[in-house]
Length: 77
Image (tube, rainbow, N blue to C red; front, side, top):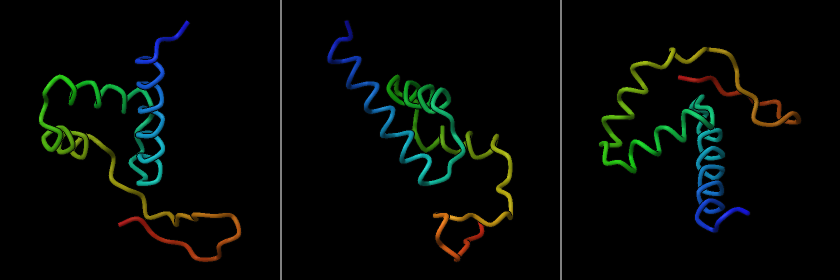
């Protein structure tokens, strides 16, 4: 049986993952959970974000479609 704390943690991770996808960070659930755990342990979130940006591959110039019915495309910077 799952505790309430475990359920809350899973829900929080799912919400963070959805936000991550909306922002197109490219982070998977596992990586995101590690980053959250590091912040929970006191690491500076801004410094951690800088490391993630440095280690991430550059964004592609491929068009991004936000819906299958939309004709407008946006390009990543």
